[in-house]
Image 1 (cartoon, rainbow, N blue to C red):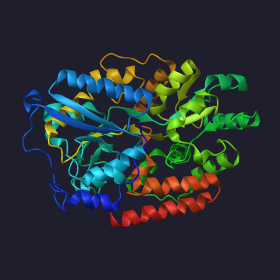
Image 2: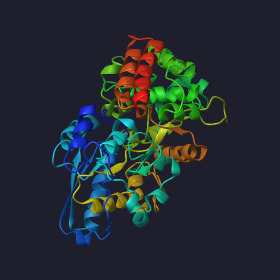
Image 3: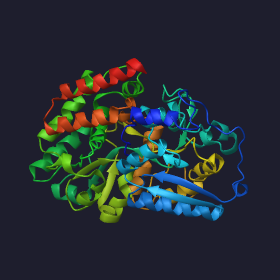
Image 4: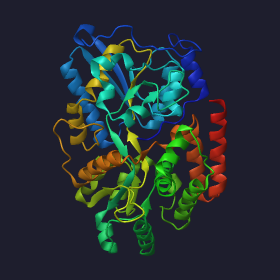
Length: 447
């Protein structure tokens, strides 16, 4: 599930950098000098893998693929640790500063996690394995870009490849078909229609958008969709990558103001900042909310709870038949190899196995959105086909922009907190974006 990890603290980065075998204060390549793809010759191996795939379909895909890997390589036992992203982050803090870290982890892209770990010398670059497995050839260039970091950790989007993702993601809008029918509405084809649907739903006593924002980061998805309507994709990409623009630009403040307006108009549930994000499929399936903004991570659970009554669409364009609006997305959380792993070659074989076309079949069969073309499986549910079509459109039309929290090492917490304050009415859109810009400018000044 694409939910950003809590930021990696400076203390953790320092601990990782100074840990035995990490290369001290200077980041260094921890890639093996020679690569072996013969997993059987590695002898008995326990490969420890940490992931945050805790929702139903995602958990099922990991269980099935881990079992299939063990069946192919009986000498390798997968020791899996799967927890919510918050719990996993807390455990990761201790592990990276200790002597027994996992071999493989899911590490969020951006400056907050991946770049910080690269800077600390805590990850193995995948370049030496390219000839053996062809990771770069397997994925679209845009996905590779988001999983790439320069060796000094100062620039994301270029440099060495450090991770591979099993899933693709595009943030869009789930809708309850029964609710729309009862309201006399059809799936919106333009943004203006969507906003009118929100007003209609509210006027008839419905909660227009279900949002659970206790952890602060969830509202980044809503904000990102709004930014896609007010700000061009190139400007958003430049902003996230630190290549130009500011969080106080008029188009950005405009999106923040719209989020504030939604909250003021009662478009979110009461207690919006108190609900747990992972629990979202339950209330939505029970009828709380006409729409739910999110990505493929909700699909399998919603399908199980709602059947064909849940569907999905990309954020509508400004005009019917017009160019698709930009939205957040890209590869799911990538699997990476830690530099302290005693079995980097086996770990690399695991990354290869988990992203083959055959593995993509399992991802598809368990309700996920495969990052690359599956060997044979096709989505069998309406919402699954919606997601597959949306991913194809988003990729072909090049409308995906990076998740906003990639922008700085602390931006997940900063922006998430700002949006929570804006939703609660404790800060204006302008005040909130000024806070975000201070974090952003401070980071760029010392990057």
